[in-house]
Length: 92
Image (cartoon, rainbow, N blue to C red; front, side, top):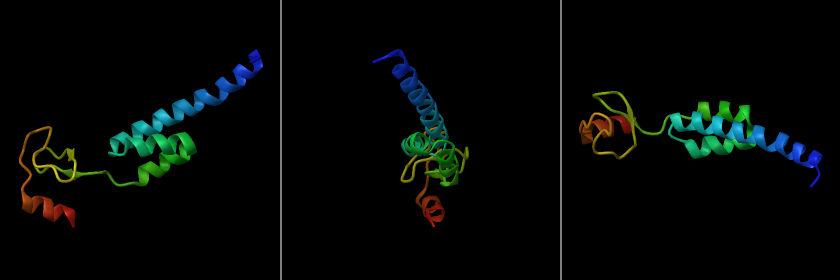
């Protein structure tokens, strides 16, 4: 490979890497890191906007209001128990 080919390859790969990492960061905050990575890699800033349109994955804890995965029994942050009535009211 010539130095020009390497420069071209670096100019192509480096921005794609950073766009995918930014997409992962945005998606991770919404509980969808893998999807954010993929959309950031394929679509760049448009993918970032798309991942922002998705709802957060999970439910809010009634005690500390952090996002916990759906189906969780206890909040992983404050250890509050998530009752069945709370989970059913949030699921609908």
